[in-house]
Image (cartoon, rainbow, N blue to C red):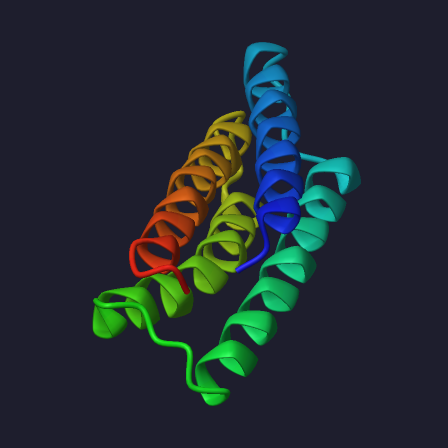
Length: 121
């Protein structure tokens, strides 16, 4: 797990949350900016996942490996699910859906880092 990548993911999550809330408050649907933000977030998460899997293959294991793998698999799905749900939402609440997805990922990525560093991995 890379701390720099965790921070980058957190920054993108914060921007996605702000963009989502702004569109909700403006009573507008999401636009390409929101989708590009979700796509960037997804790319960063895939990179983080690849790095974590490589470390696992090399023999580094967190103490709670099953929990770590569950978070790792789930975190990659949240932005995709949020973007698909927001895209299908015909009301102004689509931005809120993306904001919740961004906030969820921000919490999950820090929990992943916490699980990884618990054993010095």
